Structures are given as structure tokens and as C-alpha cells.
Amino acid sequence: MRVTGAGVFGPPSDRREALATLRRTVELGITLIDTADSYGPHVSESLIAEALHPYPSDLVIATKGGYERPGPNQWLVNGHPDRLRAALDGSLKRLRLDRIALYQLHRIDPSVPEEDQFGFLQDARRAGKIQHVGLSEVSVDQIERARRYVDIASVQNRYNLADREWEAVVDYCTRERIAFLPWAPLQQGDFQHGARALVRRAFSRTRAPRALGRIASRRGATPAQIALAWLLARSPLMVPIPGTSRVRHLEENVAAAAIRLSDQECAALRQER
Image (cartoon, rainbow, N blue to C red; front, side, top):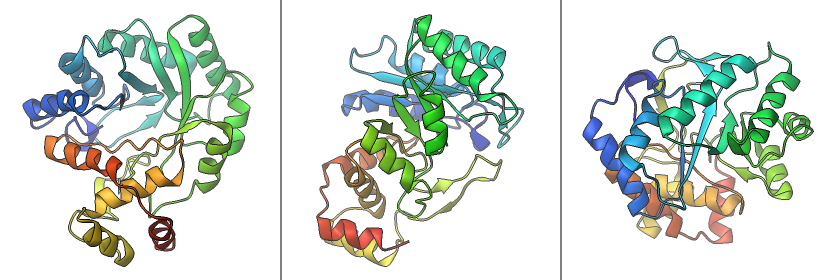
């Protein structure tokens, strides 16, 4: 999402750095890149293909459909099957793929019957356009209703050390062996309701809550790295997707995967909100 312009709209301010960041992901061994047709719109998907196609055999490109973008910081849910079909076909073309490895419904549209949206995903999978199906910002009940139509491989909800509204969903996904992709893993603003992007950070790279700061200092790590390490320790099905358009931040984020927090450190972080 970050390899776009202000308000997640239009091209990035530094196109060369955005392309370099994407290319660096595969050099670092990253095997999943999460995007959406609404990022830009279309900008992120097009840059991914430009930077990385033909893709490494082990790289999963996950994308999403279900939003319209009339302008910067404007997000309009549209889950009508015709709109989803056009979004999916556009993603296939921009990403230069015959099939999307993981296609996610960006939001369930409350104005469209759920069975129409889940039925579209079921039909697209049967047609071979989608390999696996995911959902975003959903409750346990919604996941279970979707599973009546199609297998759900992943759930992408907002979740991080400071915002744990979806604890029950994390636990459910862990029990059911469904990958959980926390968006805003570093609490980087809320675009869902059209709010200003990047308006607040619960953990900046220089300031942090007490336990987070102490552990980061002791570990010789940044607070952001410890926050990502906590997510990885939270569940074996956890797949954090921190966004960035800078190589330096990408490398810092990836280094968090090597940090193994103790049970005591995890407990101290869990108590801190």
C-alpha cells in the first residue's frame, strides 16, 4: 500500500525507490507480497509486475478487491459481483498472471447479500482465476458463513500490539489453521473510514511504551522490530504485512523475524496497551 502517492492515491513520490524496495523483497527471501487493486488505484499492482515479473517460483502475490477509489483517502465499499469480477480481471492483467494465488475480499459490502459476494469467490475459484480465497476485516461469524461457500485460507484484520480488537479472530484462525495477516501491524493510521493516512503511530521508531522500549533497548532492536517479533510469537499462523516504500525500512522490518522473544517478554508486552 505504501508504494503509492499521498492518501494511497496516484504514483509514489519516489518511483525509483519504490521499485528498488520491491526488488529488495525477493533478495531478502520474502515469499508473500500483499496488495490490492485499490492501492493507487492500480498503482501498486502495476509496480509489482514491473519490478518483479517474471516472478520467482516461490513468490505469492496476494491481492484484494472490493473498494472503489474516487480520490485520496476515499474508500467506498463495492461488493457487487460485477464490480468484483471487473476488479479481479483487472488485477490478473496488471499483475500479468493467469491465476491469483491468494485473492481476498477487501471488505464485505453490507449493501450486497453476503451469498452474492461469497458466491462470486466460489465461482472465480472454480473458474481457475483464484487458487486460494481470503477475507479482510471480518468477525468469526462472518468467516464461518463464508466457509459454507468456499474454503478460507487467510484472514486480514487490523491487529497490532496496541490494537487487539480481533483477539477472538486470531484465536479462531490459529485453531482452524487459517493464516492471519494483520494489517497496520505497526499501527500506521486508519484508512478504512477515510481518515487521514498515517495520522498516528503507537510505536514510533524513536519513542515507545515502557516495556516495549526496555525490551528494544536490551535487544539492540527498534521498538518496531519488537512489535513485529511480538506478532510472530502471538500465533504460528501469523503473517505480518508491514508496508513501506523504503529499502531501509524494509530491511529493518525483515530483521525482526530473527528476534525470538521469551515468554516473559511476551507477557510484559501483552500487558502494555
